[in-house]
Image (cartoon, rainbow, N blue to C red; front, top):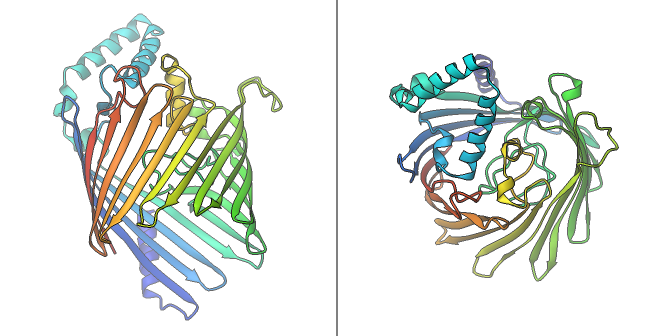
Length: 421
């Protein structure tokens, strides 16, 4: 794959561009350091290189390819970011205890020996290069798009983003989103994307994403249009994937809708909601005993001095009302992208302000209303040059370290320097 990509890139560079064709190359290099205030003073550092290539053929289509090269100079064990008595530690420990109780005597002896070696700190002295994956290469985008009079069709790994929510997107089944980093780039999805256009403001999108067999294909449709100052859409999808099945996530059918626009005095409004009907083993497609609803709604406004403010509420019908009910199923739903958060009710807000055209000050916060915990993500970004930026940020967690979703995670500080080309 690497050799093929480099060969195609070289061929495109050496091949003279025709008058109706345009080749553009760009990307960025980012180096970052993270520090966690845990008892072991955990640090990590990594570098990310992104090369973006776009080859436009006027009125006919385009070819797009984005290559990501990620290098961990000092990788981070994600479990080191949880406090010893946190909700996450309890969930994981209970899960392994249940597995341990189900083992035979001979298997328990082996498990006890492995745990003894791990607890001794032996692995801590191994080289990162031998114990952790140090570098990865990912083809984030690799697509061919064809233009026709009334529709476009896109083949390959592409960006798909549904919904209007900022921190939460119930209708977006294509991406796993971190509410504390709403502006993070979407990961490419391998799919066939057919888009029909009706007039200037209406479209119908039909998408299918392949799996190991047809039963594990994900497919859906979304129709989008406008009414006055508002833009809206309706969507439907059948979601069953190989990764979801591995995590114990059942097949589900989803109907969604979203709305965004301006209500009055330049105050923006957004809504996004989904009705989901999982089909567990033995259930018929018409059974709705396990159905649930997720929705988010919020407002945003930009003041005359440039200060931007956004607030959002999120209801997660799959979440738990009490923190004592957080378990391994909740954890897998969270990591598998079925929901954003372990609980039912959340609030989010974001504030940003540009100072002297060179500094961008911002803070994003997500609050778990049910267990009284929150995370605050303040950042300051400085444009050293039009092609170089420096960003200093932090993740600050508040709440009970033993009984809340966010309180059991160590605070962290990060520094990232990015150069664009």
